[in-house]
Image (cartoon, rainbow, N blue to C red; front, top):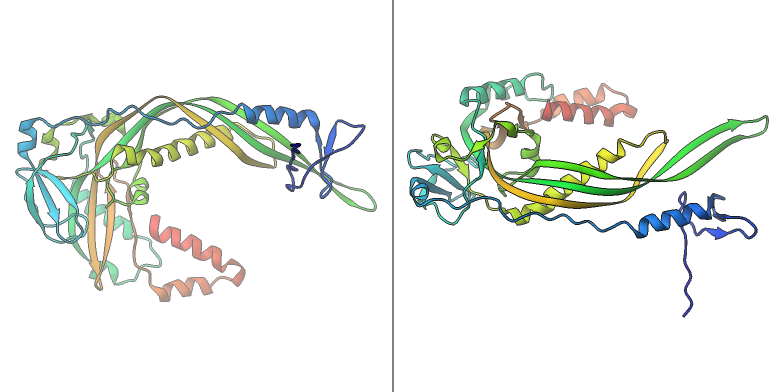
Length: 362
């Protein structure tokens, strides 16, 4: 059975048609012209672009020794179901996630021992001070919030992270355009040239983090990054003394998809930054293949602060190593409309976006 091969216009997506007597294809819809040789080269590049291969060695974490297991306790929150690991000397009074009381469930069993830990560098007082600073300059914050909100709990907790290493070979194809404009006495002209751009190379990634806790929102944990892994040490149970450790409930296998997405996005951004001189640049497709992919298991230090105001709980997180602090705050609707209406309608949406970002993250 005979088949036809269609080539799409890089500008409008229409079907290109070969122009007899020339070496060019033309789009009947927008009149774009493409050299046949350029299409053949693009076909060859696309045909030889391999699929993604993003795999890791299965060696993250280790087994606990019998003595270490005997010294570890597991607390279970009856409200949110959180499981928290601590040493035998830690007195658990409330859940660091939801603030409700927790009860001793039993000895530690059935989880991997971390490979590394980043010890806490900042204490509880630093977390309190960071909260005060976080409240400063928030124009949409209700004025009485600072005086009326109540800090329910400040807990130091080691959050489980899977760390992924890989050497990556990448091939990427971009579509770029250059636009030229000119005029004569009768018309204004615009000429848009389209280019197929290929990039390939190798990149190294180390310690790409993915938190291993369903209770910790990924965006919250990513907001307090980065952690300085050069300060990590081999795990010892002594580092847990006086703190909690969240028991991971998302395994390394389940975390790979998130790690791969972060690595692929980083690779695409790195190669995109090597392309310049175009008015527009669009990624058409990419391929990333790993060499020596490896996963590790580590505990990272996080201070969690739970505050209550008018019956609603607000949770804040601080990087226990660097002090980076994040958390949502209530909004005074009266103040919000005051600022929005101060702008013209054309700038109202932009003003809202800027104020919202300042209120929540700075």
